[in-house]
Amino acid sequence: MSVPALVDHLFRHEAGRMTATLARILGPGHIEMIEDVVQEALLAALGRWPRDGVPANPTAWLVQVAKHRALDVLRRERLAEERETWIRAAIEAWGDRDTHGVLDDPMILDDQLRMIFICSHPAIPADARVTLTLKLAGGFGVSEIARAFLAEEPAIHQRLVRAKRRIREEGLTFEMPAGPELGERLESVLEVLYAMFTEGHTAHAGDALLRRDVCEEALRLGSLLLRHHDLARPAVHALMALFHLHAARFDTRVGSEGDLVLLAEQDRSCWDREHIAAGVRHLERSATGDELTRYHREAELAACHTLAPTWADTNWSRIVELYDELLKGTQSPVVALNRAVAVAEVAGPSEGLRVLEALAGQSILSRYMPYEAAMGDMLRRLDRHEEARVHFSRALERAGSLPVRRFLERRVRECSAAASQRPVESRGIRPSRA
Amino acid sequence: MSKFMLILYERPADFASVTPEEMQRIIEEYNAWGRGLAERGKLGPSMKLKDEGGKHIAGKGAAVVRDGPYAEASEVIGGFYTIEARNYDDAISIAGECPHLKYAGRIEVREVDF
Image 1: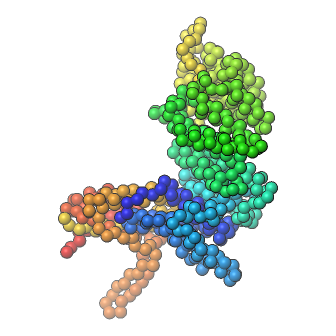
Image 2: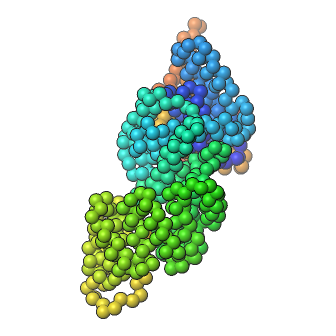
Image 3: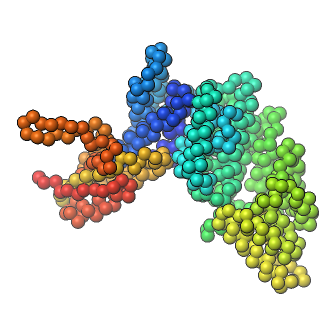
């Protein structure tokens, strides 16, 4: 029995790589058949490796098995002779170029990039793109995607079935777009990776480890884009900067008891230096063109927080400016809400409250937990504890996950206690926000 | 020290929908168990049997050959380990730690007679 341990997520990543190569060879319309071939190859390893040990080159082993299975499938399918000859040759050539470093085979990198592009194709329903990318490019299972996002497995399954049917019906080809189309399609890819990371990072519901895997997958796929000379564009670097700077704070967001730890209270010395350094590096490279995307601004926002020595020493006025610029592009009430929180740091909680109250009519915010929590926080800092309690209670009604619920429950209790004591003057409670 | 064979019964269908990440974790659990034995020199030859294409032969003279078992069967012998153990109790305690019990089914423990 051989000793070497497997590289982290090897199977997941190999599943993505093998699926991508087979999609090039057999066509993305046969994606279900391809997924079966890949699953069988991995299952063969599950049968053999526990008894034979891990082979010296696990990747080459898996590719060999997948090649045999794919050739079996080819024999069953009745294809035109010319097409069959071509497919057979392509399968046989798979992995032969560099069986000891399939990772570095430029052809396999291209296959993965094509897969990422097809998963975020405009013809795929927007709500299915992240799921499809995780499944096909990332090698995530349906059960894992469901657990990460606290969704029902049949719902995820259905979403995938619809998306794959769309690939077939629209006859999507497995080709990289070229010329001006490449830029448009890249935008769509970046939106999907952004959504993937954000869903993994901000949703406090769902399995924490899996959500972290989802964020790491967004980072991995982003780094694949950067390895392609035509895709290493400033916007991609900006997005990667954003990911790294957020990922740096992963470990400090939840306390030892599983409680939510607000940014103001996080132990900044525990932030991940490697992620911060990578984030800064990408931020520098993002500034090389004349392109200025929302990812640039969001990355700079993240940098303002991550590079600040303390909450108080954060460059809040720059943060307000960046939110102002973002608002010109999006009109998003959620961005406006974040801006209000920053305004309170620059101009005080009464000004923050004024900005928040001006947003009250926005329909999205009326059911938005962070809006109620921010209202509660401004009022609490203004010693209007009874009103603050009402808003924290409303936030609590809308909170999904346990850490957030516990945090809000604590706030409701504190406000009730403070309101009943009716202090003339409140001291000692440091304002803090998510 | 005596030799024992651990005969692994499993239900192939159980793994049909396992995710790649889970497969890797399961392999690592098996390997950790095997490595522990190998390091103490207690692990002998171990093999996986092919799920498909098996044959049963029976009968004197003109033997009757039929196919099976099939991968769809509720339970098949998936493979075996051989181990060194002091006695049955020792062999059972080693087999009892095998992840096979957690994931796939049951293990028959038999002392090798020689």
